[in-house]
Length: 505
Image (cartoon, rainbow, N blue to C red; front, side):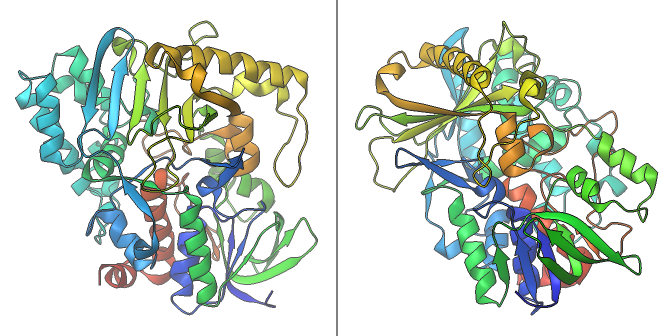
């Protein structure tokens, strides 16, 4: 460990890794501090029964040559080393409902996407084409999303932030089934009928329509490559270094103190931790009380409950696609609004891939929503790899009950699923809170609300001159959103024009 770093990055989630690599490429002395025993945040994987599971990255979009994430990963020097498997081009996402025996496909490539939907909705050509046109139109308004220079879109086009996703989609067609199919993957961004802006839908869906891939052997492949690239440029990365305190000098951050007692000094500091958690550690009057209050009052996105299913060998064929299932297609925007009796109203199911020649699946991951209030009884407990604790028998009973209910729902689509299951593991909002550091276990950062469109936007630049933020809570979540966020943070340090010229060239 060096005596003084040019940049200290707190947290090794994708945003922190992107920032660290960009700045190390500028010959700055960079250090990453990670509290866990594994780098990567939501890129982390874990192993159960010798089977690898992803924490949060089930598939990635925008990776075909010259697409947006391809360009960013090319600049970060990892695109050529990634082991990827392209999902089914004629149906990478499958949408289904209890009250409809048919399955509906989202295909890759806009022409293919349109033509595939037209097979099921032959009288809706105008609506489908207009939907595709509007998706691309909205995405074109976000410069960094397209690896282009420009001011934040809300400064020139504030209406982009106040158009409700549900309203716009429903305005295109009166066909309720088509409305539901176009909205069917809103588990990707925690779609809310009253609050979610259309731009969130557009930026998320567009990248997957352009191209969709699985990362072979899990998302940790990305974090491992980024850590390796960082070290090759002279950067340092330390696990089991949890930052617990900031020290100040001359109204700037002077150093951070870790739980192991080490003090790391730096000239610039970037926090990849949830801004709410970072503010709790700062303990300073250098930030306005109104700013601190605003950030702490931003609502975090709902949490998730996941099943990690280990399959018996050679019992379930690998599915090169994802499944989004909702009980009632009329309820597609209300999956979050469940009661104990109606949970779960829907779920997303995907499979990991061990290699590109796998015929049989090793595992299935199923994710649905879970409110933090559902696990509030155990919020005083903490359990992570570096600090293992037992939450008690009541928590295990709770998880077992939820597991059975969710598997019962899956059985409606896959009647023989129980015969294929070797073992099941689970995670709740408490798991995301403890392992990833998400406020209240929120799966996608902060809620984007058309009624208060700027409330959840946090600038990467703070009033403390040498402290910056990055990560999924700033602008957009997901691999692409967080990568763009990392570029935005580094633009504040290096200059946007300078940085984007290097990325584009």
